[in-house]
Length: 238
Image (cartoon, rainbow, N blue to C red; front, side, top):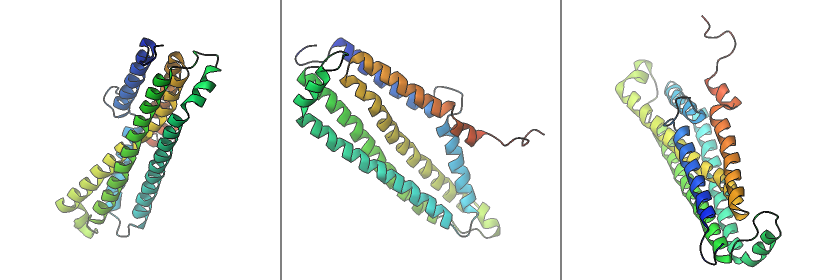
């Protein structure tokens, strides 16, 4: 490896990592495969939730759910900031970390400049996640306001155009907040696979593949997905 730049193997591994991230994002959002993902299935449930909410006169349960979503988003935003601070501490301890990496059986330690470039890449991933979580938190807050703007149902009031429009707005805001939250969470997950790059480009590829396999299973083949789109025995069989 050169003194100042990343090797060809490093760049190839990084390209594979970014490609895996993009393809997984597109697949999860329903753009690449016909199989329904967990994210897509949950969006349908978000829409069902908003329609059910519009039929309720007392919406304490809906505000409690929104509060839980905001708290979870705030937790991950704070965690991303803490991890960012850890990355800058890592830059200050480059010599010690390189000494540890030099003792590993795979690859050996990279140059100081290459190591710092990799740390800055991790900083970018975590900063991306933080901004996604921060925006998702704000969107969930907006969604709470839109839920409050849905008229209280009285007979046909729950089915008039004004109410339907208010429900549609709350649904779209909820799904958009969920999309940005998922993007931030995906960034956190992929930052785990990114850590393999500090060891060796091959380890980086393998850690990315392992992470991708776990995420694909969760999105398309998990028990959580079956729970969302499945039916209990004897239901829907005629």
